[in-house]
Image 1 (cartoon, rainbow over the protein chains, first blue to last red):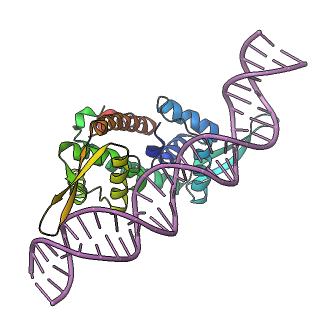
Image 2 (cartoon, chains in turn blue, green, orange, purple):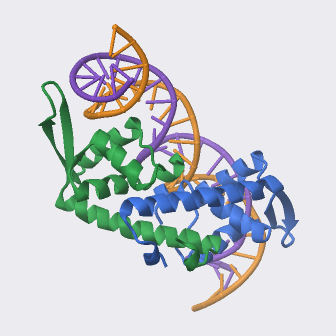
Length: 112
Length: 112
DNA sequence: GTAAATGCATTGACAGTCTATGTATATACC
DNA sequence: GGTATATACATAGACTGTCAATGCATTTAC
């Protein structure tokens, strides 16, 4: 995983995951790990600041769930603003990757 | 242009451009602008530090060319190490974008 | 003659991820 | 019973890299 590259996409990835279903921190790391075929190994130092940031921005809501006598999980789900932000970020990602491939001269049919 | 996204790819884009032909700073910005269909508007504050950084790392070589009685252009070209770095960055970019699309659930045939 | 484009470069602000650390429970294995 | 690993949240300081702003100067178009 390239952390420089991650910078611009982390929020989009997290939003995408919690849009399918509400999820808690550790679960999000596992879900992203799995969907990316072990490419993205999210670190706590990146994930939690991002979650708190997006909650402050109104993209996410959170609630606690008891998961055993002494274990709590903090679930996050996307708000309507979060959904809108996700769509915007997806469109931006598409423009960006198209632009990069344009500079690289990559033919479209090489992108499988 | 999203500057967060740019972060991880700027060096690759510059290397790609000067690999085709040696180029000077302003020319690189125009070439990237054109190849990306006006998506990437490289700023001096990003480009020049990157050029100097890559020259220090041995990825680029530079030489001055007179372009008029009182105008000089500083051309950059990729070294063999720069070429190797470019190939590595391209492979990393490919893995990265594949991973992102995997998380987004984007089907391969949607990537044109 | 004057505005815009060309050309190189640096500085300080800012954003975002990383490593390292802290605290604690749950599980698997011997 | 003990120990290592996985689970679970969170923060602090280091580090990297882009940005806006600025500076200086030449060339071109009107």
